[in-house]
Length: 330
View 1: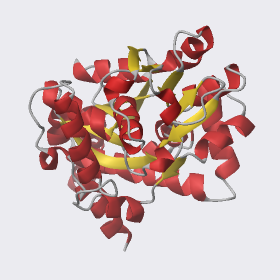
View 2: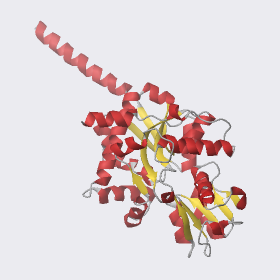
View 3: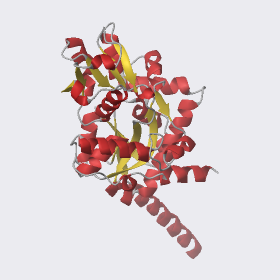
């Protein structure tokens, strides 16, 4: 009888421990927006990859700008963000660490010009719509510099990126800088418009990442490691020819675009496997390194008075989560 009592007590204690553990497990809130490298998080949700790795995640959908604002005021724990914009947040008080490189833009970020403008050099003296302080701004300056022009050679008009097609259509500007799907929409809406420069002309100028608040990372490091594992399940699902059509269908449904059309957006996004991402996590000075890319855009932001002091890049980027994921796979 005593044996039965002891056994029953042990079972009840174990059950209670499991219930308490489940109750204590945090729900990690991730903000994501309309960019293929972040829309792909929808795959993790729909295919149960978070549950597979035992992590509770609430995905919250935003326009890009509002996602950054939500992160800045602590409404979400992490945000899908470009590496440069993550540095802006670090400079302005919303401390974060990039723990994951989703992709780098390989053509989806574009300068789209009205009919009759065929090259970047043709933009001299023209009005260009761009969202000030975002990496689109840095992309534009890089394009101008590579073509022998200065920022003062054009007139910049501040605009929300999601309004790019609408603003180009009105004739208020001669060109816009935007990412997919907004760049594609501009090309579609303004008949005869032309792509004069893309992120494929400078691979690595824009990395798309997951930035986690330093507070959440300190409290829930093990849970964020599980999020990284779930992401690489997404990459495997997207890269497998057997499941790729379903992956694209899931992403397209999230943004209300036909799957066939959305498939074209994928080509301009260089999704990275864990091994590929780790190579870009190596420290270096050029765009092939996320450190080098971030240092270049950090310099750009200081020079353009987006913020005053340079960010200590190495404190806000870590390859450890990707490396640990790869080591666990060996």
